[in-house]
Length: 618
Ligand SMILES: Nc1ncnc2c1ncn2[C@H]1C[C@H](O)[C@@H](COP(=O)(O)OP(=O)(O)OP(=O)(O)O)O1
Ligand SMILES: [Mg+2]
Ligand SMILES: [Zn+2]
Image (cartoon, rainbow, N blue to C red; front, side, top):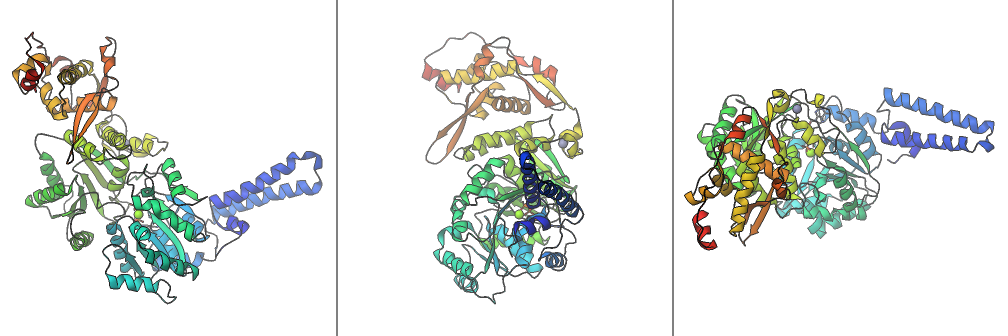
């Protein structure tokens, strides 16, 4: 199957071709530099190189998939087996590189068809392809699909029966074994010596044709979904160095990819990257009222009206939320079912299957129902609670519109949710930072939502590329810049007062104190406000994002508490000329209201001891 550098360069479009021709160019250039030694022969050779370069470029442009020994079979199987008429961008290039034996990282948006880049080569190769996937749901999704197109595939995971595992392990070295793809979890690679020894045998028998590591960002703890067992996958390339490895992801930054490369022991992979932009997805953020759970009523109305009879997912924060939100939606007449990691495997498979076949309209799921889930006609992905990072959001919302038709991605952004998630991610590497970027995505009213995602993935972005497919671009300049300096001082004063009494305040306490709830004594010591709750929450969130407030965690053996403390920029407020602004939707906060709604109180008042005061005030 291997081809010499010249053949690979001639036949393959893109990187390999470029590698060859730049090499040729450099050679010609060097020959020219050694001008003293010029002979007619050298000049001719140089000109020939240029000519060859031009011919190859033309061939590359007009016949990008110029015959490899496998090209005809690829085309045929694409049509006959996968029932697809053409390749999507980068697919053919990735497949040809992998078929040429190259190690490859493929970074392509959600739903653009990364799986085909190992499924099709598997069908066109001898032996089988080993596919590592992080989730059983993802594995099942692919097995279900492959079965429907008559491609033989098997899996090994924690819930495989002994008999099934025995059969698969035996067939791995059997040249008559029918399966073309073997799906395993990383845990299996890390923990099953038996599996590794069978793989070794299959490798020696030339039956291990390719290794695909799906969701490869899970290797890196800088990625958004680090799986400790992915860290051990380096064993694959060490044990099977001649087998080409293909790492696939939709959500890896450059530094994450570098880390993955090291962990997987792939010395010089070729990386193919496509733009993150999913042009058919409409991104929208809606505010969630913390006083009531109107969001569920709102979501059920959306599903029953705008998305009537259309398939979708509602993402929630916890297993408990999956159960309650699903029950609430059912109560409102929506055909919904919960999905979370704690359900037994059969129930999970059943929900997944019923949803895939449109017997259930909506899955109310935790992130357990995420990566790789592939249903073509998902018309909406609604987040009842924000995701813990932009990467997670991109992954989860990426379940929508995989058939390239329009689909909506809506987030309900609630103040209290920030802190619920914050306590969950506090132990994760840069977890807080990632969460705040997601909060910034939601709170933002003046930048195209796509631009926030693009910056996050290190991509240069031009707002024209959105085409009004996000609420910010659609609302145009419907925002105002308001001065919140005085508000910031009031909030900081509340946190300072609590600090002086050795008291820690949760965001809820700060909100209520500022809004004038609680003991009369406290109201007399601070400046309260008549702003609405949503406005108060938006300002506190903005102060957190801008660094005037920061998080202060307290740990007990059972739970983690989130408190607010002064942030690094708080002392700047002592400076009279320092001002802070924030941008808000015109329909949200009104500039006039902002500057006139303080209730000046600050009455003098006699103070008892610290402990007594603390009791009375907080
Ligand atoms: N060439 C093609 N033409 C038309 N449809 C295609 C093509 N290739 C793949 N598809 C379809 C099949 C799937 O239903 C859908 C998504 O493919 P899939 O491989 O699951 O995406 P992905 O792996 O890139 O996304 P994710 O990052 O979400 O896992 O695209
Ligand atoms: Mg995938
Ligand atoms: Zn936009």
